[in-house]
Length: 409
Image (cartoon, helix red, strand yellow):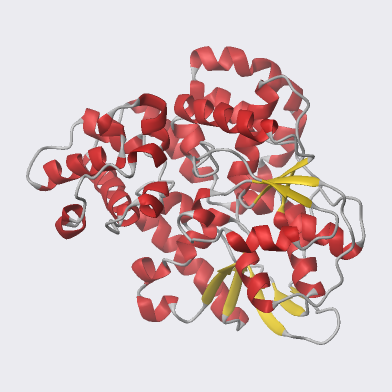
């Protein structure tokens, strides 16, 4: 933990109303400035107690406090350093260790996730019925049962997608772990949209997990290995720009300088899909989509990357589409990478809060830019016993408009 970064906090309290856990519980030690105070105590020699670790674990890492802070405190750096310290020195209970071992031996490995598709498809109905009983045994297992989505047909992407019309650019595309295994249609839509806007899209088959889930949970060694492999795949592919359609992945890859060194990370530019399309400018014709759309700000897009206007501009440019805002849009939905598995009670409360705000918009469609958010909000709406609002990615909406379809989700 960097004492200088800790010292930047003046404890003004501007972060308090933006922090999801402080909003839920009103506890000072579960606010950013409270956690920074605990970090300072540890740096000054106070042992890292289970209670301290609990307050750090309860943080979603949503970075809303970074947006709100007038002093420019790098809470994002501090919480990553702190979680790495927790993993080094804190001995968790056996059940917690077993759960974390399962999560981090499964989710960062796309092949293992794909191997789960058939069991999930076969047990879908059973999982839904057992979820309430599982909650009494293990909230984490119940969360896994609730969150697992219907398994779509597998989509096989070519290694290279040719542009439609004159080539304007060549880009690499990250397929991701959860995105690739459970939302392959989003990747397919992303490749089509880029191609229709004149991009040649390179999709290296050897790419793996970007390391985001591991890094955000303090597992820096694992994150470094995964980041190195991902970067190597795009280096071999010969691309200097990589387009990412998952907010958490994009924010991590933009910080690869901390994991791999600035020279290595600087060899490839990482951009979010909305960010890149806004820079590139449209050439393909948009067909009308008569929809009312609510756009959900994924935390690692809005707060970590500062990308808010671009997806809204892309959606608003679709003829016939009406964009509406969600109340408390800056408050996290509770997904936060693996948070809804490791902290299921808090995540459930935040998911229910977000679902209520989303449904209050009366929108026909919810648009998100992160697979974890999609899973979290869909699960929360289902718990309310209401007709589920369809959820799509920005890429799928643009894909439908460019191809003249009523929908592509």
